Length: 193
Image (cartoon, rainbow, N blue to C red):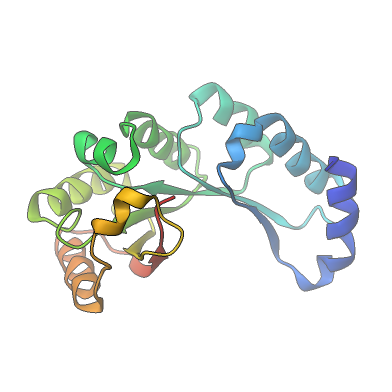
């Protein structure tokens, strides 16, 4: 859909909105269109006050973020695991670029939230929680964190073997991360696709 048509659809809704969030798949795979959409929103007389947010896996390159930053108000970045090999096991790729994106966005004042996937017995181990605490605390202990409880809906077949995350595990993880000095921890639901 052309950007002009998207803006035309958004414009009548503006009085009821405070912002626009683009989510996926992975929206940064359409970087040129994403930049064009956010630019159009920021330059439109009826929409210029809307925030522009991005829900992302964080794999965009620094060059890509530099193109997006002038029209981006914030990004919510998924970090499936702090440990590189565990992240690779969960997603098929490492997490170096995701961590670089988180650091870059934090330095630019554009990191709205880091989302941490809680898979009971997998990503909620003491070692992984300590790694999350070191990484996020090293970026900014005040970074908003959203714990995402793993659920079976909309997942890859191999993820069916993982248990759904219990409320008790979420409470434990939230408390442990808070004990590690992270100050803004909340929770939600997630899926791995």
